[in-house]
Length: 522
Image (cartoon, rainbow, N blue to C red; front, side, top):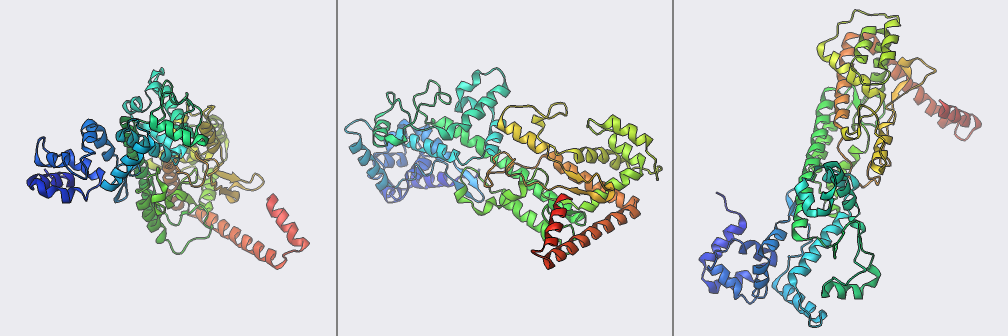
């Protein structure tokens, strides 16, 4: 069995004579001492050296009394890429000199009252974690409250366990955690210790009312060590899961683009075909590596790793089909009844029966198309996705939009109602359809642009793959229709370029203003 670094140090010190321990122990921090001391044999040389150490002898009684809690605080380390981040903000990272000065300072401030280094350290660690909790976006916090085991919920907020069912427990837990960053010091300080009372006396402007909603029957907002551990462990697990899912989605988009680079583009890229395509999947893989390193609770330590946020700011995937693909889809649907019927059958939309009746009555050009089995499966998915964006399953009930009162639910409903495509009713469907690009920072949960964006809805990824596969089949099965769609797209690009040139040559003239006004009304 491989020994840890702390175990190796403890074993090495145990073999040394006691008189050689002090030069080594005096160079360690309190965190190191706690980490090494847990492997010291009872009654051995290392334990004796720590007990009589000039540097750490004063800390030894505190360690013996609160051994388990101090070891738990030391273990609260969260990975950021290849590094470890201490969510307690180095509350135990003290040298012997810093430890002695802290004891002396608090003894003076306490006016002879007892001072507990352990209680003060727990309070500092708790407030550091709760301060960092302010950095959590609603998205990350929501995922934590959805995924955290109920055993951890019972430790962090035991009072929410009185709710009737699991859903109610998690909803109340989310409200409690969301209110956490708004909780200040207590106005009723009758139950506080001398250190907190002294602090409140010196900082009256920071005192706020008792947060009864969040801490019923609780005299302090500070978390205990088990509460801190339950939150940090749950947060780390959820954050890793989110990062992994997002990285896998970006890698999947990169692999999809390598195959369908002539059918997919970046959302804000022009409709003209791209000549250089190799760098796009490379960028997606590069960003996926950074996404894996995100720890949302402390953004200042990872400025570069947050560059993947922009890839998830859309209600759809960060690659979209070219408009000519949509035009080809409508062209084939108009002229081939069997393809349209296959798309309608199995699609969970409210207009299926009406659409089927209309399809059977529609005159057809090519009605003897043989549909491959996989295309028959993918057509309904594609048809359904063109009607609306997909949203989280937990907000969908029997295929209908949810009707919830919370702001989060309302925002999700707003996103789900956004149109995916825009079709001009005054022109032929085959030459006027285009995809609508939505940048939904204002609609996404956590509207700030710097907030953490959730992974793509899995069904959005499924829809994109289904659509490009259907288009690939249509290109092979209906080459003339594909050629018409591409020619129409090229013609529109030429018209737009000509319009831009005309506007540039007549800038400031009345004619230019008329063209601009007319183009805005189109």
